[in-house]
Image (cartoon, rainbow, N blue to C red; front, side, top):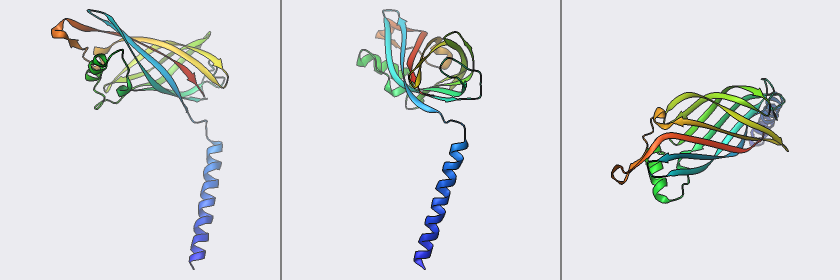
Length: 192
């Protein structure tokens, strides 16, 4: 009796696995996760500053207009930055950045692609940028260069951090004030 139950279970399991593979084979391509390097820079009343972080890009090809390196177009794309992973030239800068960004409450910065217009060696990307639970539309140019099995991407966007609820750090009794305008640059190899 137990042999029959085990055999019945094994047969159902094998059928379920085969059915799952059949469904996946017919489904649209899933997004691949790739590493993207981000550089965030700005100025203060005393000096300029730059911090870096590694994030991820997920790009799923298909069902839209072609772009360099994406013959079938891009169905969806997202960029994610883990706030707690920022690296700055010194520990004090990291502390001030993390105090302003509140990673325990808002662990990620995200960008979700909503559309693009391809031209020349790139595209103009439009989408929703979310920082500290504030989501706003952004648009920026992005270069796209086919490279082996992937596409080299690079782009930048400037923004006012206070528009996303981030209070610029003020230290040394107000002598050093970080200005709200920042520039975010990114580059990496994405695999569609």
